[in-house]
Length: 97
Image 1 (cartoon, rainbow, N blue to C red):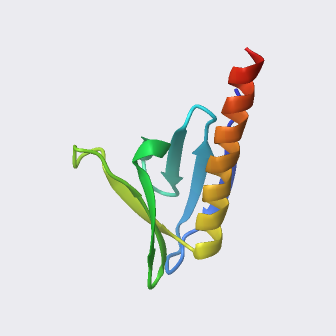
Image 2: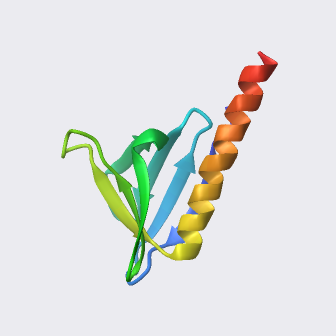
């Protein structure tokens, strides 16, 4: 299955981040220099505008699996488009089956 990938520089930080979006509704975020991969699904994601950019929030009942990352407004828009395209791609796959 096709997985979309984008590389971003985090605002107000020297770190960079790789975002992977799957048509199955999954997202993975890998921050440069960190061992941990942030994982989630689209249903628990939210975008919140803040002064320093846009906070991409993944919230679940478990605090251990919840996370957030601040993106620039342009990068957050790209991630949102990637998610919409993944949803459309998944619908096309399901129709073709």
